[in-house]
Amino acid sequence: MTALQTFLAILPGIVFCLWMFWRDRHEREPFYLLLLCFFAGVASAYPAIILERFGQGLGVGSDGGLFDMFILAFVVVAFSEELVKLIAVMLCAYPWKPFNEPLDGIVYSLMVSMGFATIENILYSNAYGMETVILRAFTAVPAHAMFGIIMGYHLGWAKFKPGKRIQHILLGLGGAVLVHGAYDFFLFQQMFPQLSFLALVTLGITFIYTRRMIRDHDGRSPFREKENDVLPEENDPSPPMA
Image (cartoon, rainbow, N blue to C red):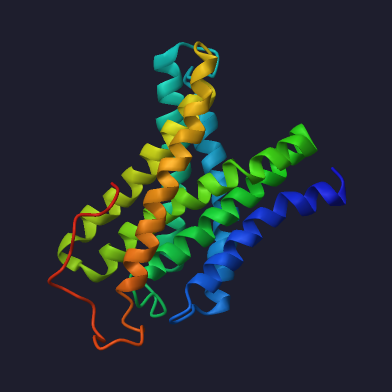
């Protein structure tokens, strides 16, 4: 693995982190906590690998039928990875004082997701080479960013809607698993190769929804220079995506 490959494997995740840091312009998060979440995402890849190997050890492999592919994509991979990322956010950011507006759920979740995607990119680069790294820069890394935004959107609601905390945490995990699993399923299944393009369709639709999620929480920031300086308690619309 060359230095250039390593650089290109790391670059996309860093770009998304910098973009999110810029996007969180009303009240930026402390740099140390952003770094903590990023490296927690890196560390979370290890238990995810253990869980995935355990699932595959039960006989769920990528050479089975559509049902096996469904279990592999949604349970063995998507659920395992999103669960460890959720735990990382809940431990490293959710309880602490800097998490003080709904948008912070997206910020911290994206940092964890980019840490995870970065170490995953390095591993894939080492195994499959430069072409895979370049392809993943435009597919898998943005996908992980969007999974993180979905989860973070609901964690932002959970933090500031105590009566619906468990509901939104589960919605965040479930929404991320749903989209992650669908994306992986269309890539994993080999019985109908023409369906692989639906992975990109999934990402395109998810992109539209995640933009709405960011705008929604950004508009609710108590740090915006507007007349209202409190979170709108009476206006809790149904989440754009669950």
